[in-house]
Length: 283
Image 1 (cartoon, rainbow, N blue to C red):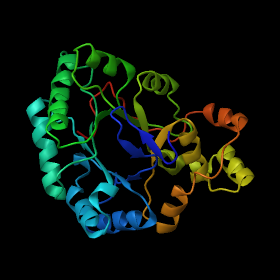
Image 2: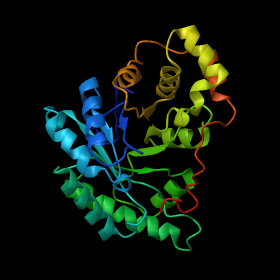
Image 3: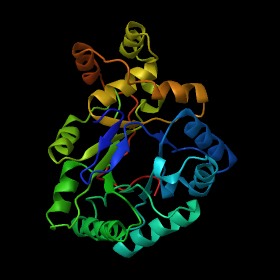
Image 4: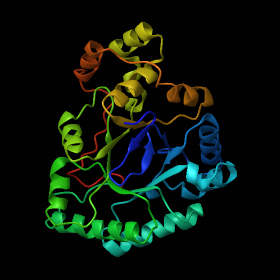
């Protein structure tokens, strides 16, 4: 991690905190939320085709007055795009909806589940479309989301031309997948953390509240700082501009190692029930 950025394998610098747009209802409220986030200082905006809000996020980006090269826009290919051609066209559709010429980062949203007989080849076929997008300049960087070590290892068995640069996973106190985190670091894969506040369930945990008092920070700031100190780039979501600003204000303090260890050992809390090895329930 370099200051407030993470350098990817290809030299692209990615902001260490992004603004998440999952569960923002498509419409004017999404445009207003993203506008407020950009005004607060967020430069990484994370969305996905499956969220259904590409058009409204694009409106906020264009109206922001911030030059395109100062923003880092991430989008994701949904599991219904299970061929290289489908991934390629899906990305172009999202770009068209957002009225953008490129994404800074494009991710495979979920791996093809191992319950599918040809899951390894299917993931490789999806990745071929990702490589084409990268080669043709539609995206500046490519990666995966919700991939476990065995998914990434299987992908690399195929002698892929461009290796993933990012893995976006669920990551928050009470959901510390150290095996996947350690594997990604070994592979020089940057890690992003979705649901870094554990869908808010983590914020009222006794340990988190006690540490918030100790460091004179909010519970959310403790969660986000914990992620950063694990070299994980969190992607919080809020529609409250005050909270948005606080969520960015996490670079001027450190959590002591003893307290980091306590958070690491928290019991499971706030975790989604989504498994990367099973077809996503919203599909």
